[in-house]
Image 1 (cartoon, rainbow, N blue to C red):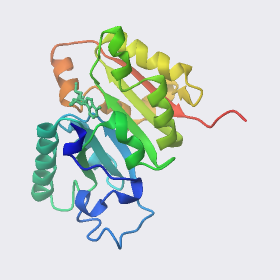
Image 2: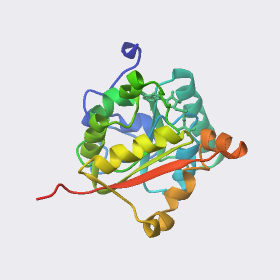
Image 3: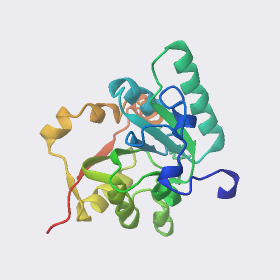
Image 4: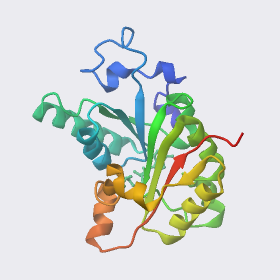
Length: 221
Ligand code: SAM
């Protein structure tokens, strides 16, 4: 259960010195203006974080993952990359957590500029739709954590889930779809189908993917 892993009681309690020790040797004396900006929700084995790390070397990012063993694997993977590439991969980390419960414990209002939901679990049955990581209710939370102009990226190989995520985003007043030109110009979009372990599996099987990429907009006056 959740009681087995520690959860920060508020965003100010997230210990940056544990996650990014080279950048923040002391949590108490750290620059409090430098905050995590990208979140990879259900990060799995961490492939996206690793690709994003060198693409956005100045940006702090975190993966959130429910499975303990998978989280430990990602931690080890990041440590090994740091050792093999001195000075690199210092901006990525992972935490074992239930993202459906604890997003507000990690991120303040408007803290994030990108949130990623890559190949989330489909939860096919109607009664389990409430367990989906994209839902009208959870989008309210994501809209809170994202700054205006921030972007939410979703991709899946399950057509029905792809439709569901897109419809939830279209129906939410605080999100609008990126145009095809904007999608083309965004380097993170290129990683959606290729950077993660799940994406690579789908690509190997020549499976179709369905993506929805939306921008956080301000509320109508
Ligand atoms: N994004 C990765 C990829 O594309 O390879 C992993 C995809 S995998 C199908 C879905 C992941 O979400 C699993 O690793 C699962 O443990 C994680 N997950 C499911 N529910 C979660 C939750 N409530 N909070 C955090 N992670 C969750």
